[in-house]
Length: 201
Image (tube, rainbow, N blue to C red; front, side):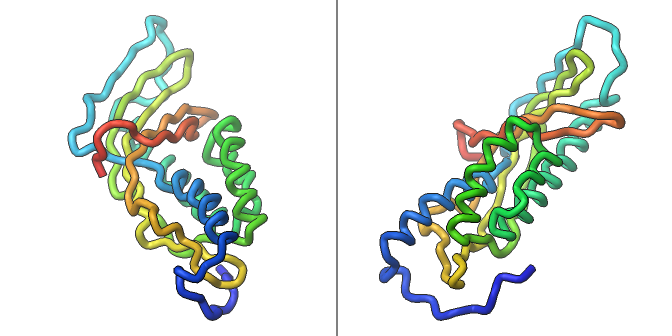
């Protein structure tokens, strides 16, 4: 994807206050991009069964987790595409996340666009593990632990300068909650929260 020609980059120590403010804004999306983790000792998967007899969305816990892995990869792909394109066409999030969760991210992407910031490089999921899975009222609810590695990414402004926050974490543990939709069923990310417990990254 085009990022423009490289330009002279002043030493970080000479950056002006506006760059510091910009770093504060863009670090929010880095937190979002730092989305997932696999606990070294994940909590036992919780499975709840509905008292009503209904056709299952997934035939097994393993199938539900496999679907969650695919959903997480697609979520990361779309998130990366939007960030690398400077926050443009952020409504693409609706393809991989619920409307409510997508709307939470639009303001951050708007900051990318208004500040001319784009991401270079690609984050990866370092690990994923099942947290919980249950079905209710014909919907599957799957939560996973995940660890996102953004160490190979940088942020640049429209002048080609590196504005990557100096204090960002290379890896961050997250918990993703997903819900099924459609036929055939697929999972959409409904919540992406930083894991408050032990850092399993």
